[in-house]
Image (tube, rainbow, N blue to C red; front, top):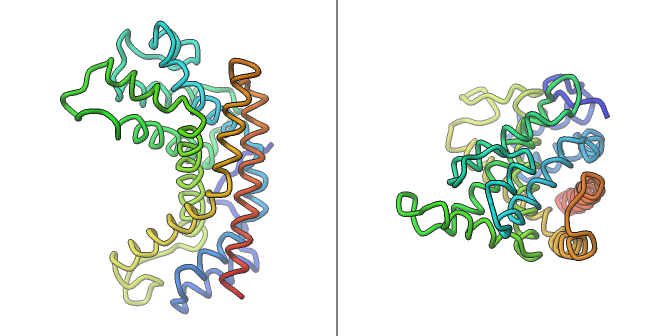
Length: 260
């Protein structure tokens, strides 16, 4: 597919509606619902972006590599370059670099950058939250923490966090770039506090929309690994497209509920 450059989204009627709602200081959920509607077609195209499939594959297989005899070697087989005994920062940098090196096309896309940031943040938080301490952890602690994410129910939570971040970042970026959302007395947000409150509502709105993929994600992860022993690029592409479509449907349901 063609890469999605968020700064070049058209000033369509739907986006003008979003701008009007912002200028009228409409409720945050109403603005977000209108934004999701305006971005529907672009989010549908993003569902088949190859960078998303690559991110899903890494998200699924980095924890699985922690169960192998040599964690570092398992990561290198995924093209995640790390030292012999990787710490959390090594994994974060390695995953970001691996995703950036993947041949997803001749140019980098804004959506691809958001996918990369969402993946790194999700894995870093997922692994880091179960470490005994920032300064007390060693490489074995990191490996064990990563291995805990290699269960169907854990992957389900990781996937939900990833997609929640990705959707919130994507909608937020479109709002900022296409509508020039400023802060000030004559702007949609009168203060940083108002903007922060809006961003928290956006994150919660997108998090709510990702609940729908919990069972799907757990079943897909467990079944695919049981049958095939790994996650291929083709499998991750099919899953990412399905998950994005399901979340898109849920966003539409939430939008309809806001306007009911």
